[in-house]
Length: 156
Image (cartoon, rainbow, N blue to C red):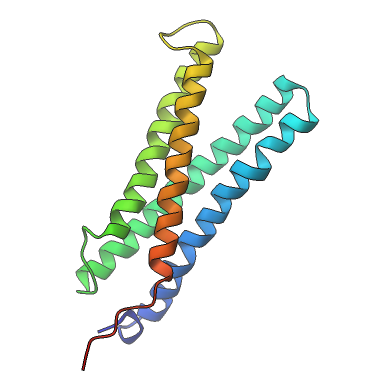
């Protein structure tokens, strides 16, 4: 039984295959274009404000994309079309985890570090944040690769 044969499954399959590559494109655009550009054209403080704005939007978009994908995978599992504990589910949850830790946990610590408080320096926290963002990109790229693979047809 494939997604296309279940009621509403064809659209679900399309969303499942389209969401991860769009999400990966967003992350790569943020990493390679949107965040370096302000530092190349603006004064450092202004650039930091622009980049903070970009990362805030990206974090909430990632939360939405991850939750949407998780819900799609749960629906597929309930319909008997896959496992709720699939590699795809793990990759989406990994991206979600890296976002929660990398943005929602580290951002307050980075603000404290800028003010000269906290155990770690701003540079150290920035490095951790960068690694977590890179891991998130890898999760979403791997997810994109996996959902783009053709469905395995049963042998007849």
